[in-house]
Structure formats: C-alpha cells, structure tokens
Length: 172
Image (cartoon, rainbow, N blue to C red; front, side, top):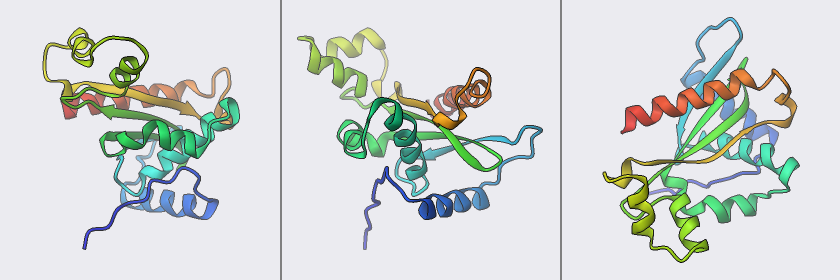
C-alpha cells in the first residue's frame, strides 16, 4: 500500500513541536558556539512541513499570504522541492525552498512564460545550454518576523544561502 504525504502549511504547535523533535533526534544539530544548524529536507519528507510552516509564518504576517496561496503557487513543485531549514538552539527560524528544474523548465520559467509571449524553450536556453534538470530555482527565502532585525538575521540567512550552494553542488 502506497501512502501519499499531506503537504501542510498551517500546522499547529503540537505537530510542529513533534516534527521538530523527530528531526533533531534523527539528525542532531552539531554543537556550536551560537547554537545554529541547518537541515536539508526533501519536499516529500514529513519534516518538510516545518519548511512549509516557516514559509507561511514568514510571509503570511507581512504579505498576507495564506496556506491556499502557497498551495496554488508551489503545489506542483512539492516533489521537486528541497527545504533548507535553519534553527537556533533546535528552534526553527528560517527557510529557503529550492526547486529542481526538469526538462520542461522550472517555476521561474513557468511564471515568465505565463506573463510574456515567449516560448519556454527560449527562456530555458537563455539560462543554460546544458540539461535543465540541473538548474535550481529559489522559490522562497524567509526568516520568522520574530527573528528579523538589523543583526539578528544575518547568521541564519548566511547559513541558508551556504546550504543552498552546497546542496546544489552535491545534487548537480
């Protein structure tokens, strides 16, 4: 029997605490002076709902985005998504969603093709002359509002960017 994972953005405190505990018990964060860690989580992993919650919690209060907005915008890219989840002292505080391209393009190409009268193949060839499934798209990047500030978000955001570069390098 094959089960389908539910992609959930609006998870409650109990589910978030449980997922966070599972993620850190399976992949403990390294001891560091400042307590920061970054986890790379595939979009089909149950832990990826932490990434979705971080997206909604980062963008919802500021831009008014809802779970329905995110589902509409990213639903067809879920199985190609990687979530880079940064935490401090085992408390998630930021996320970047990377989306792997396919031979048919990626989210940016899809968005541009829907806005302008340009063929997707023309857009894709402007990006790379190689296989497009090696092209990664940044879908979202956000830090929780409570962790934003002049200096507060530099370290977590730098960790997220570095994790993105390393993940792309390792996955081609």
